[in-house]
Length: 265
Image: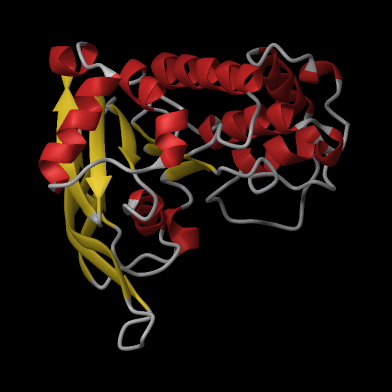
């Protein structure tokens, strides 16, 4: 479903602030893979997701989704292939629009827009049923402006919007990092439910090593713009946090020193 081939990205090239972010990253995901991504700050995790989403062009390499080379596609042309949930709950929704209007935007993502906007009765009924999945009571508040929701409610809604059209690939960029532990656990549970029930292919960046081990069928570790560890199946199921710390040291040739990941382990 996804094939990344030897992609490179350097920011501020040719200046004193030049920063290589991706150094020949290659990754292949089969349909239905749920892959978690861990690594220290500046490892290239979010940069890789941005490359897939087309936030900016890569310097070299190729990105293919479902057999289609999208390397040269601008971000808006990739929208029909991708769903995305960001770290900031405010990013994935329109605060001044209602819950049902946000869902309508998501449902029409990647389609040609006409002059007509109104939400039909059938669409409204569908959104009502979809919101029930979240178990947050939002199906009774469909005309409420999204800006009035809590961070957790908004992130759950964003997750539903991102998966509404069953994208070829779902990108989750530390989507629970800004939430309190109880709310984060709720959103992670919804993530597993939606990905598994819809059989989505997903990439999830996280700083929480326990979540990275527990969720999905595959785990990759990044460091300095490269993938340094790739594990799946039973080997992944048997991993412990101590194993990941050891693997990081072995692969990177140094000690693991990332307070955020240590604290969340």
